[in-house]
Picture 1 (tube, rainbow, N blue to C red):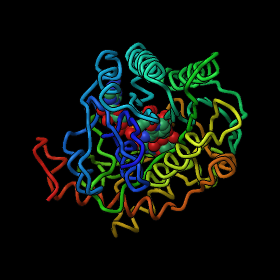
Picture 2 (cartoon, rainbow, N blue to C red):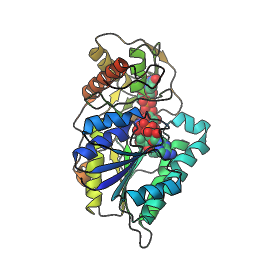
Picture 3 (spheres, protein in one colour):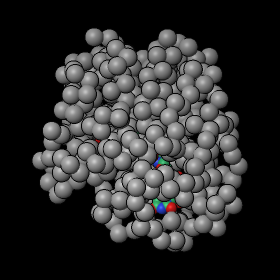
Length: 352
Ligand code: NAD
Ligand code: WQD
């Protein structure tokens, strides 16, 4: 097996796809996930997908002693840090929950990793660090000015990581990946977005309406300054996103970046409106989607679009998949999950 890579949040939506791509690239993922927003059954589905026995520690990143034991037992050359809470609305209602988990937890994790010998840290950030911007496309030189506690936790962790790796004698290099709007699922339909709590994102909500778990999709406003008036976003296929992590990690471990800390946007540079997403699902499903027009959602911007050139230049990555791919893979995953009863009340469901 190749180099061991610690993957926090490795049983989550994006983390599970990263684990698959790490194995495909010859790395050995070591998963730390406290299952606060993931099912234990993801591990056996990942082992089926990768045809490998995988190591998972049910550990909270805030538990210093447990993290020290993990790294003593399995020294890792790199760390891909995805573990976090990610709901913007909840972060406004319970900011300290987010600062404790996303900031204090990450500080503990980074400290344990550096003291254990350091290496490369790839950090899961978000386009939310740019805040409420009215310009697009967004490039990495734009000001970091988050406008909600969740976005602030990401901006703070970017600064903390930059300060760590630039400290005298630091053994760690840092890379922050600012995701735009991840969507889609692995084409095996064994893993995909499987929110434990009530999702806020468009794709999982469309799925819930399509499978009858929700009555209707509320379209949050159609009076934005966009081609059809609905919100426009830069959706990125989760497999493209996962592959970008492997390419970025390889470059980081090979010392390929000029700076000890770098931030890169991960988006496609192509954006789609809410109505375009809905129409794409209706074509895939072959039936209309129940929908109503509602008021704008507070905090929403009209358009969020990445300038993806820096990632293409720095790690040779560009998105390979488009909206039809994201919709097709999401719909296939939803069908499989329902077939196993994954979204029934109990967690006993297992893939056939
Ligand atoms: P997710 O909730 O599916 O995955 C996060 C995983 O981390 C879960 O499996 C959860 O159990 C685990 N976790 C959370 N707190 C933990 C802790 N204290 N200790 C150990 N494990 C813990 O979310 P996701 O969509 O896969 O997001 C992964 C990362 O990407 C997050 O950092 C998120 O902020 C970031 N991100 C997500 C999006 C998105 O739209 N999904 C966009 C931008 C950035
Ligand atoms: C997309 C578009 C909505 C739901 C979020 C988080 C962000 C990041 C990515 C973590 C918008 C519209 C949505 C619905 C709708 N996550 N919409 N009806 O808000 O761009 O970003 O996910 O880092 O932090 O904020 O994505 O999927 O919520 O919304 O009309 O029921 O769909 O108005 O235009 P968003 P989203």
